[in-house]
Image (cartoon, rainbow, N blue to C red; front, top):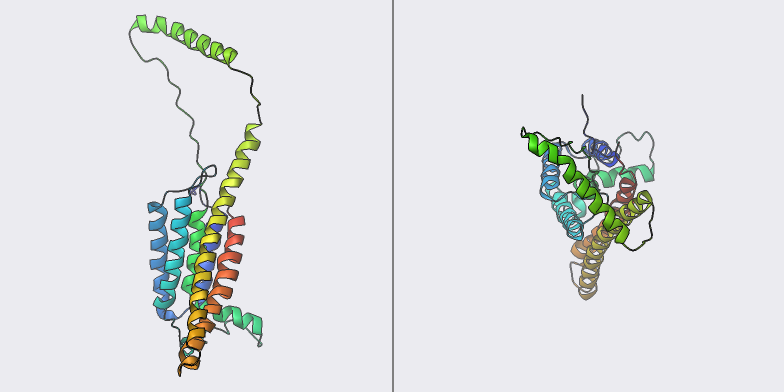
Length: 263
């Protein structure tokens, strides 16, 4: 069976991560992962695919804001809310024989932020440059049946050759760099700029949301509902910024970005 030559290791890791999140989420949410995959495939066809030698700032910002919006949307669509009582503890001990605070914390976060984690991984697969499969150019042969055109074809070739040699001789000397090194350098710069812009956009969104929550908590610190409404909201804001943004969006996303080679 033929395989797609543009499938990257990040795509395969995204599939494995999705399978892990399916085992951690609630049973009614499992069909939603099919809808998330359909969305990812649609965005991969709608958004222009970047290449290793050329990136697009507009594409990077589109993927970043799409990931941010759909991560928030899927969190609430999967049953999450800003209330502490909505935290699901049923899947926090899957595969854990003895109590381990680190393992339980990771599984608890994965079960409640399954949709948001999935979209962070999907955003990296959308942002990774796809290699261009070069097809050999077809060789053109004279197909005219006119013997006069066939006999004059070599004259046109000689004229084109002489014209190219004359232009090369008249051109001033220029510094010549190895094409492979310059190509790889430009590709690395393009991909590095794309990741930097993507991370900058997510950091700006997270910082703005934290500033808004902290300002609201500071202004309403004497409110009667400070411990029942605003304090849980602040805890959720910390979970979004530290757990989701720092460890998943930046940390896991960077690992998937490093694993973005074609396999």
